[in-house]
Image (cartoon, rainbow, N blue to C red; front, side):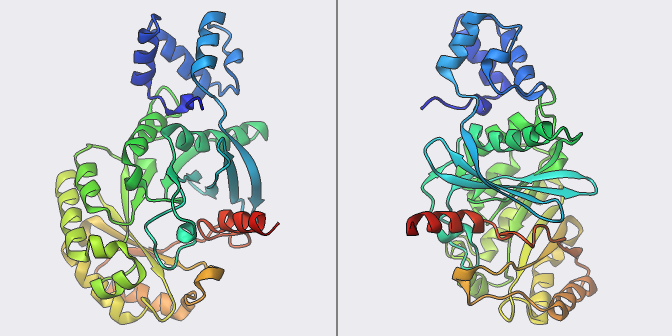
Length: 354
């Protein structure tokens, strides 16, 4: 199977052209056709010779996925289920906000992190996505805008879809390089957020990258006992090791970090957990923000329910009283399969029962 051309960074594409005996400026021409003019085939690249077009066609694919299902919410959110070239399914979500259009991308086919409340982990990881397959999710959404003749562009990216981004680190870094390139999609680094469940060695590595790209940590519990119960990754990287890595990241980058906290009814949503979380983050509160997330129930995880509005309010107020910057995340797509991985899981089960 030919690789996606979207997986090549500008420098890699220049090197590739030189290796083919061509001038490196060809890479900039191709880059412009891909990301500015957003062509759907190599043949449309009209200022590139036929021999070079043939070389590109022999070496790369420009379209490696198709829309299998598209769900549209009343609030403008669109969830795409893409079928990859090998038949695997992934989810990508477009969310509209007052500040622009944000796309949540997937980095793996399935997930091995195994958070007990999450639909993404219902189907174990079968493989990593290539950098090109991650970039192509952005391109598919942008081309959706182009086809609808809407004067919209993807302005923000959150790497929070199916899979653990830091478990696919090299392809993640290539993806970030491509979408941030100022000659292409030019999505600003500060408009991109990468989320991790807490793979400690990669947090140290990420701190050394010198990126302006935001980092979010899925914390979901303030103590080892509770976090291990709902997130098995905590056995490998307990809270004290995770906090040490975060301290290193903050010292190295001086950039604010977001802590994602899904509120589960009568599990981690008591005022006691709020006080424990405030204590855990106290020494880093000036560079921390807690994003409180109402839970989207998943049929297979029936033991978990959404916290009550009263519990959410009390948790929020307890954090605020203790000097922790926080907010309750605005919900999107509540009238469709809102939970990450839910649409994919349903479609695969439907296929298995046919």
